[in-house]
Length: 247
Length: 248
Image (cartoon, rainbow over all chains, first blue to last red; front, side, top):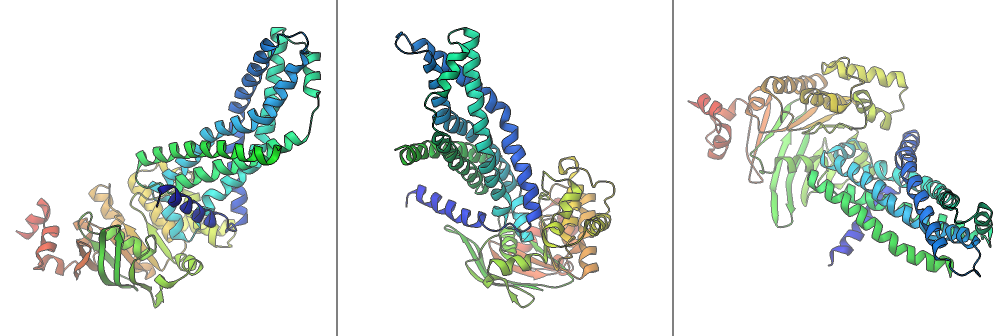
């Protein structure tokens, strides 16, 4: 049987263990807060940096490519808004988070596996999969939409700052472009994608960390696999979700 | 008492445990010895359920562990403490949090009660003023002692120790060995120690099971092991310069 089916089977079996009621609600709450901090809030800096610069680049490229006097310069604001909300923030930032957060989750859990800390949990009678992975999934699903909304805001801000600094587009034109034909559904679409991607990142990375077997080399390999497979799955689901939600 | 009955375990084509049957007595330090790769760690992991056995039975005081479901095993495991080779302390928690972890998960005790218990078990393993240190700040021997403290925090009926002396100097090894023995006798628990350290065998081996090529090859105690005529056991026991001098 191809290895991919075995892997998917193992993933489904692990998720059955993950999605059960936490043994102690108070401990789960503490873990959740810790994970929201480490997986979400500690990513704010990189999200802000990348979003602002990508928004600026999209604005500059659009402004330089408008050569016809029939196209108003407000189209720059419109293009930045649409690019950032529809694709750049939910998908590209999720891919960035797959690298940052995914490798962290896989290496953390993988190290716990090879140093027998997961065995110690099991011996105590703790459902280790639920204890280690469930708070990370819940935290990611809760905090990633916040990060993505923040990324949208930073992307548009970056685009506006670039236009004002370069003098290519006035603030009035840029702001009126942002307001053209705005549909709230695009935000719903972006948040829905983000929630799916957050689940993909945390569950796949948790899976590869949990099934690690060996030593330091295997932890590194698990981390790489977590990032690669999370990214590939995000790209595939991006197509599926876009087809489902926008057509 | 823990009983292993006709245990078989294979990994792919490799038959690691071959029809192993053995009884481990209550209130005694039961040692499993054997060369590296002989199957003793696999046997211990089968006994605690970290590996599922292919056939046979594991019985904890008339309770058949092999046929228990997840929840039944979860309940029984609260009676089990285990000391892992590297200590397996949780990196993200300090000493106090590590020892308190099983109490947090499985008891409804107040914080003060839990702190009292943590201080008691840390004191029992001769550790003072280390509560707020992280595992990375501890020496090998201290890590093992914290792991023992965590293992006994819930008053276990069964204690498993996987190579408790690995990576320790002879003096610290002796301290850990005697601590395990004292705790076993003091609380009347069933202790199983996995080791290939002959010093441990001769000092705490109330009962010794020798595993060779996945089979239970010999069973005795620290007195009879030196006078056995079993050639494989003698190769193992007198395999070092120190023990060969003992024989001469």
